[in-house]
Length: 315
Image 1 (cartoon, rainbow, N blue to C red):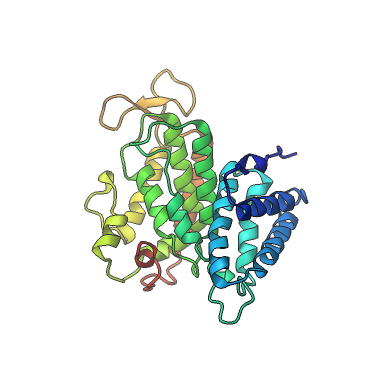
Image 2: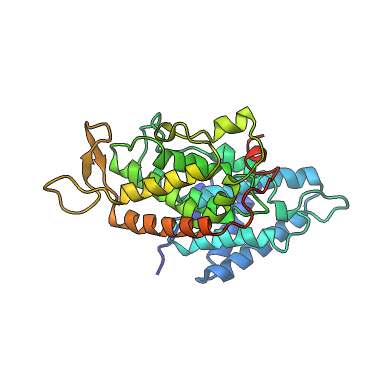
């Protein structure tokens, strides 16, 4: 049985009433059934009903921001393997399809199919706890970061590509920069990178085949890391670097005299210690490589231009 999660801890006395209302809708729906699909369907229906009564599009727009604030806080509280994680992802997908207006007002331009404001809030909420400039983290921060990225990666799709830039950022941190000495940071970065590659490797591979010229801003945003200097930001060379880097990490051996993976090894610069992938990470690397190989063999859509991909996500 999955452990109970108390979403009530998010009900701060200072949050607006609309966030309290959303939180209670989430809590009631997620606790309504042990089946994630059933709970997700109820949550999507209840949220639709909650928005229908909005007095204006501006009111609904503000309410959407509050919805995503509360929902993402809940996402980061729920471990990836917990049934509620699947329910939250499925509920948002249930809002997108069958779509329809957020509020039943003539001329409403807010459509559930677009998940209005979610992209903006994902960027606002982006705070990588493994960033070298932020060494003040705890294990809960790393688990929340996994949940956040798993949630986002499962919503990325061809018709909702606004955060296609996100996998570039986390994969750059995991595969294109020198490995951190902290094994927990190493494992977290590797977990997040393989999550994006496994969940949406096909989409990322197609995006990398785009022939659309990149602006200076776009090029800087997805610039390769220091281990990948001289490689174009988009194209098969970078994709192959990621694959070869995963193979290299999977082939790493514990230092002499150490048993098993997950211990510290010799640093890439020949000094210090660097982690070796755990057994779980080795399995995830294998899954990611399998998806990457399948994506490389699927040439459909390569070279396709898309105005709302890398360019649109950071404009």
